[in-house]
Amino acid sequence: MSHLQVHGGTPLQGEITVRGAKNFVSKAMVAALLGEDTSELRNVPEIRDVNVVAGLLRLHGVQVERDVPGGVVRLDPRNVEIAHKADIDTHAGASRIPILLCGPLLHRLGEAFIPDLGGCRIGDRPIDYHLEILRQFGAQVDKLDTGILITAPRGLHGTKVDLPYPSVGATEQLLLTAVRAAGVTELRNAAIEPEIMDLIAVLQRMGAIISVDTDRVIRVEGVPRLGGFTHAALPDRIEAASWASAALATRGDVYVRGARQPDMMTFLNTFRKVGGEFDIDDDGIRFRHPGTELASIVLETDVHPGFMTDWQQPLVVALTQATGLSIVHETVYENRFGFTEALRQMGATIQVYRECLGGLECRFGQRNFFHSAVVSGPAPLRAADIEVPDLRGGFSHLIAALAAEGTSQVRGIELINRGYENFTGKLEALGATFETV
Ligand code: EPZ
Image (tube, rainbow, N blue to C red; front, side):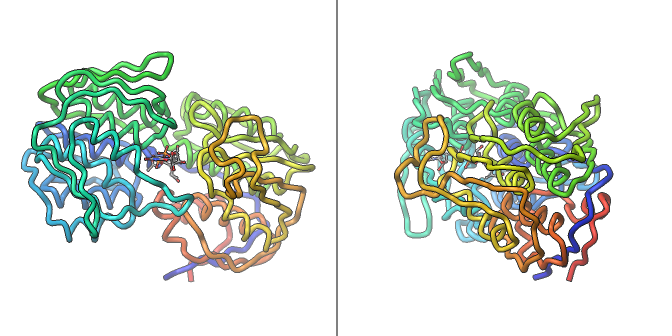
């Protein structure tokens, strides 16, 4: 397992490009399974999640062709068959995507099997909403010791769902099932992230009938047949914000080609409040450190259009360099401050709390989850030997190593490959000094 030896203290300066959003492209590939024609997805990044989903789809008989440098994936779902359960296991451990194959496979084959799911350890990541939604469509859910077998002997019919929490995955589960279910489906308290809206755009191109009301109620009229789609994925706003935070933390100046303002409004407001400067043009956004001290802030993560939970971890590294006390209340996941342990080892002053340190209603108050943090700065960071805990925490560790004085060892960088395309190439383009050992 290779690791990075990072020589910190050099500001990141230069230009990088972000391509399609990790949390959209995998779902659009699954959506192709619903169609009776071929589909083409563009602006697809070369990340592990795409490989995992391509492998899963091939297991089910979908022909997947890739032009990796060109960022094009072509999918032909016309010969879909049931995959062998053991084969699914080998592919699925690294991702939560298999759960989203259920609706399409139930429509195509009448059954689906889900092995135990992978994905980052940032809470217990349950799938209870997903299974309840499938049951409401008329599916039979049987828990086996190797995973979950789902069948729909009498087909799937429209239903009314009221989500306890606006879950992105559960909303996608419903969309991918409702579009071909008989009758009308209604989803209340739906997630409406840009990645969800792009998935709805893809489904509409395939022939679906979907509306999104101002009160976040999604309605779907099932159709008997869907065609293929051609679509260019929206850019990855999480990666764009990660590099913006890296520019702040390293006192740098980074142009992110492909970054799109509408998807990042809340991040940009927060970036400005911390003291960061940015210039927006038609092709991207330039993020830079102001050259003066950074300001501490009060931050709460939330569902869209709030401050995205995936933006929190990289930004916290920049907050360790801000003057004063910053307060962060993580309301989407119960356990998303694990990465702060390594930052404390490097000299950061961060205290995590069980209490909700913010005004937003939160599911984790007084339930023994350390989901609030106070960050005191500026705290000079010292190099350390770091083990990457998860995708976004891992990128945060990388930023911290780049900001720290001295040489850090960053291990487990494969986790970062899951969601950041060619990140070592981008680090080189931005003038970072490091070796892969
Ligand atoms: C998606 O995860 C993203 N992953 C996450 O990005 C992102 O942080 C999250 O949405 C929120 O925006 C992908 O799209 C692959 P949720 P998802 O269902 O769909 C609870 C990254 O680093 N919940 O919106 O799994 C859940 O525990 C990743 O790119 C249930 O209780 O997130 C959490 O507290 C990290 N039961 C909350 O909902 C369920 O059945 C939000 O989860 C489902 C979810």
